[in-house]
Image (cartoon, rainbow, N blue to C red; front, side):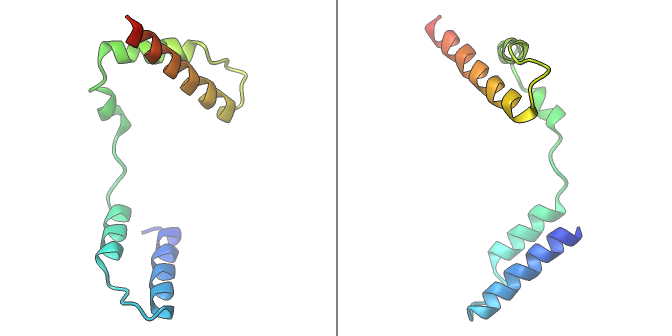
Length: 91
């Protein structure tokens, strides 16, 4: 467990104790379980994308400029994905 995760658990316990509530709860168990599980591999998720979904994502990505800052690029990509999805609905 990372120091940040440990601090989050300790904070949860402290707040529950201050409020006079039990701290050993299913919520705490779930929090710790989530912290201990490794993150899912995004590459495995991409295997389930259909060819059409990949094509939509590629068209959306082509409309994003390389020089954009990351936040602006993400917003542009989302807008392009929505536009591509709307085009697909009209077909």
